[in-house]
Image 1 (cartoon, rainbow, N blue to C red):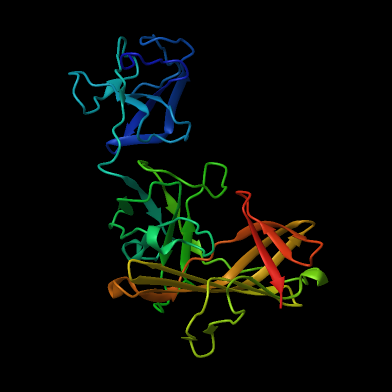
Image 2: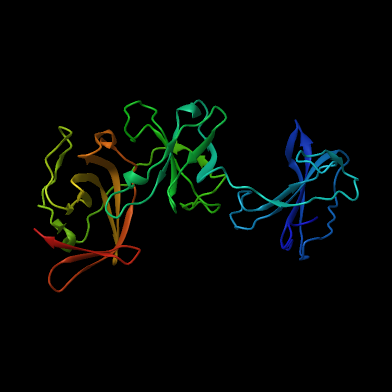
Length: 352
């Protein structure tokens, strides 16, 4: 096997798989890992049954455990072309030349979506989510894509990253993410939520029932009540019963921690530049999970309103994905509540 000039084959993998319906038979696969370095190395795969096989080589340069952009990849081809050539289990001198896998065109992320049987994958929406400083997903950095009949999607001109990739199927047709819908977020090979950065391929998602929160438990008594940060007036600008927003004032955060362990969080951000005013208002409700000095706000409902005085085509008022917010908390000697973000930033709240 050969690597590109200047490359190193150490830890590359040679895979031989049986041919079944013009594809790899996952039940008939053998592989070996090369320990020899340099740009050329010999290999031998034993224990093959008589039959037809494909032969490929791969080095996982970015340690993603997936064949994706930037990796060394190659397939055996009798004429040196790009298409794979079927070989027999007794073939000798089947040489494979690796090349660096090209990135998707432009600044893009691609992959596939899997939905439960009976659901229409073509109705799924895939989108990017960059956690905002005060709101769940930054609306200015959200890019969305539809899904093809075979489950493939392509997100182009995505944010510089890193970001989450999420997918949503509006099963009940109410245009709001809620119980009854299907929802999924990209996870790593260990099942943990993971962020990606373009260019990236094989960012695959599996949709399941929309998550619901576990029952709430009372938060520590000293956290209860209404807290405000910034120049917010301490008013909840959204009325869930009527679905109406009151005119916002100031920039800041309202946090109400209720005795039953639930919370209400209101966020108001107003920016003015060159005569244009941009306003983002958020209303979030859910449960509070506290363990020692650790606090997590786990929303079950997240709604945002975006207003631009200079570009009304960008305005919206809608439900957005629920994103948990982890903090460490402490009460200062001055009575203020201090929430520290994972990045180290701090938000200071005064009790009303």
